[in-house]
Length: 213
Image (cartoon, rainbow, N blue to C red; front, side, top):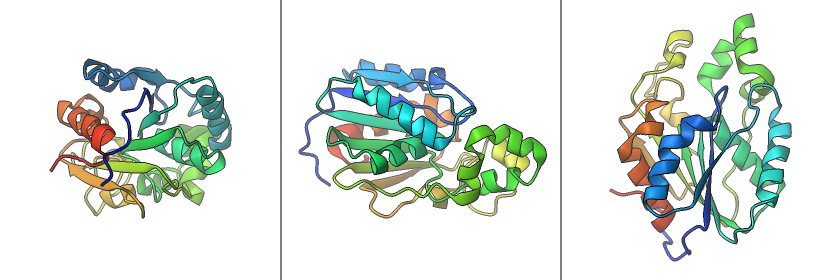
């Protein structure tokens, strides 16, 4: 792994579906204690489509003066970030850490949308889980993925899983060709956002382009 990149001047943290920036607060505070400049960002994941949220992220990053930016994204936020970079290659973004991210699709998302209430729950993001995220690792960006096996989350209630999962996302769904590193941890989908062990791994990847082993 290439650890020669300079440390990011700013870290932007993106939340997942149907929540807001507050869920990323613990992780942001942990990174600040480690002397990173970290900002959380809210976007209307429920009311706006993926394309619309990509445009909003573009506007947010256009206002960012830093020359080196890192992104830490959870769940649907990772899809937004990767689709942003597919549409708007940004040389300032050198590293990304994706947490519990359904990069190759969402078994839970597909099963839930068989029901009317499930389509309501997904909101404007619904087509993503039917058509697939259609994301790839951006050229020139070191991307690390963390998957959980805590098996605690809404997906366990509304969907049937037959493979390792974090309660919402299957471990296999967090893999993507071209990842710089991939780590499986014994944490649940939402718990990973308040896990000191996960925070340490995020810190290590942002500094070295690889997770601790």
